[in-house]
Image (cartoon, rainbow, N blue to C red; front, side, top):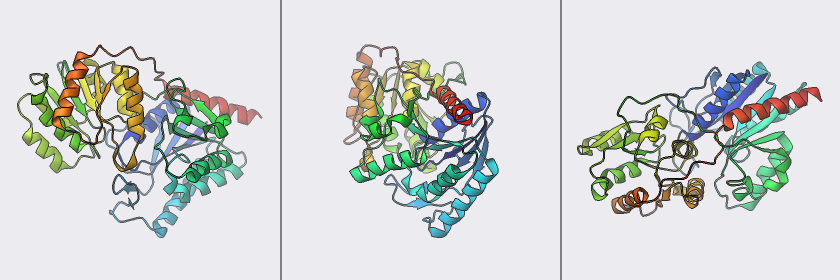
Amino acid sequence: MKVLFHVQHLLGIGHVRRAAAIARALTEAGFAVTVAQGGFAVPGTDWGGAEVVKLPPVRSADTGFRTLLDAEDRPIDAGWKKRRAAELLALLARAQPDILLVETFPFGRRAFAFELVPMLEIARRASPRPLIACSVRDILVDKQDPAKVEAMADTALALFDLVLVHGDPAVIPFEASFPPAPRVARLIRYTGYVGAPTTREAPPGDGVDEVIVSVGGGAVGAELLRTALAARALSGQARTRWRLLAGPDLPAGTVADLTAAAPEGMIVEPARPDFPSLLARCRLSVSQAGYNTVMDVVRAGCRAVFVPFAAAGETEQTRRAELLAARGHCLVVPEAGLTPERLARAVDDAMAAPPPPRAALALDGARTAAALLRDAAERRSAA
């Protein structure tokens, strides 16, 4: 079966990493996968055997997601949208997929309705018609306008056959962050969490008994790294080696400043593909609370302090971190008012707390997603 997978990230790398894990699982399950990649390339992303077709890239200018910029850092306009929509439709015609999979939309990425709605409508009129599915994370950002939330449900019912929620309803049901979920309940299938397996082992000694400080892609993580740099000397882990991982989206000047300021016993280096291996060996993890990082931390079973990204009305990371804190997996420090003293205190409290419980989360969501898509597509073709 052929799959066309539309993936559009705007800030950070979490959406890409999760989508790549799903693409790998699909190819391993025997699907021929074509990825329509709408964001800027993320170094080190492993799409497995999928064909990656790069659409004209776009990113968000800031955490507010109000201004979208093209490859020349110019705000996108009507002409840009027309050209990109035409490229996507041409790819749809070439790929002729059995399954059309769209990441996040209609539960986000509404700014891309200009290309996604025409693609979905054409796919629905095709003969034979592909299965049309959405891939969405466990928790959405809270929306202030109830009408927009209801419109998401309307779009899902009108254009989609399946909504793959990459979470576990026993942990947090989709309706906790998407109140109209009961309206689309017949479409929803929970896959469990998409946790990337540890595929690379860190060199001997790296990560052992260290405090690992990470910020994912780093687009919004500079302040946490700066705070960690100052917090070490104030904590009971002042003699422990701290390893600060700077994501690929962190400006080179910021990385240079952090490296220059790091005292003996602190390492500043780029984010590493063997990150899960470092977590499995570490004394403590300090990080934000993005989907992929949280899955890596829970899989490793290490002590953890989460500082959820919460700027510009973002609620998703805070909700996820607080949920895990209630289950004894971590301590949470709010991003607002973060200081070296508060972070140092949280590090000491986490070290004094009992070890986190063994994870009860289903972390094989990528393979489950592949199985659910195959089953649904086969049922459609047999009907």
